[in-house]
Length: 170
Image (cartoon, rainbow, N blue to C red; front, side, top):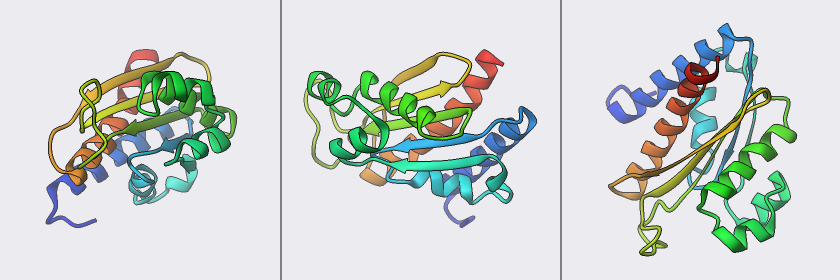
């Protein structure tokens, strides 16, 4: 982890906080990522001992991968688009069904520089968190900046969301 990049250091610190939250609750995590391309899984596995609380990560960048790997309905994608609360909720639920994790997070967004629309401009990101014994929480966010900045902010929001879910439901 490069200390010269404060954004990346912040991600490591968040991942370390997630580690403590999961370990103290004897819970495990799986990820379902689209626009972040596995970055969340990379960050959490940077934390020593993550094999004790990180089960697996799904990188489902294409719509077909979302359906094949996570069971996201093609009808949901057609109706709402890959970047939607409905799709990330199905991604998070699918990750729960296809892993041994107690908690899952999912992210899908438009990192740019292209691909935005008036309804979903570049920087639009949907996140979801699911608990085996609780509800699925979704959130729409908009992050400004370059493609890398949008993705970095998405990773940070996803990790912070795990901490928030525990604060709300545990």
